[in-house]
Image (cartoon, rainbow, N blue to C red; front, side, top):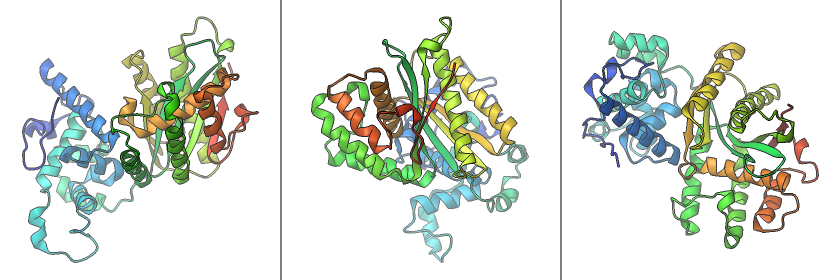
Length: 390
């Protein structure tokens, strides 16, 4: 397994030439195939650790700060202050006096800047604004740091999706999702469930997955989803459904699923904006359950269409911050989306079932305000189900 080196041990992960990289190619110009493969493995490992909330390595800690505080992407000074505030709150507070001697025990600016450069220039994540990128090429970062550090942080909406209904004879195809409207709350919920699983005797790598739920796990799954609802003050659930019998036979279901993901994000955001629950500007993080049957071009198409729509229709007031297909065992939120989507698929496509999965579905959906007798008309503050016409 690839390993990142922690603070103070700067080996191949933080290459000295990373600051000279171009954003679009992410330092790929002139790189050997072996180097590009190594870089791809490192990026995948970073995204895995990021999705699981791993904060044990310097680079994942820096990625967390860049994600949560966009101003830190533009200023290494802001990055350093936010890093110290977040990871050393007992020793550092930017708004009060502190012992200068403690500075010797903190991570150095050069280490944080090298990690930031690796993340931005080689992995293409959490990019600085275009003007800052130009100025960094001219080594003017520090002169501009004080100016950009006072800009307010832009809130982020995090969307985790999963789909169900592609296989089998069911009538409906479903894409379901969980939306989180606060970065801090997202971290809190992730950390809470890591501890909750330990208390329940569930191994960290074990996941909640609707299709893999066994009868003896029913009570555990019910307890889990009750906790999800209890912690849902900054969450909402959204799904989009299409009747497969209305589709042209020539349409491939993978293409339909991709369109459903795109429409789910657009319709969901429009609803939130029109209902004045979301004010712009906003960043959007998008995660979907990795489907090894879906090629990279399909995912790239969804990403590019979202970026274009945001730019054209919202004048860059909405920006796609992260777009990734992740293995569900890495992300508790993809697992929640899986359970929500699986429950919808169950009650829509297997209405006369009577086993433990049917019982779970009929337990979960009313918790979310879903009327089992009128599922497709669900629209409340917690849950919205949309039906896509042919």
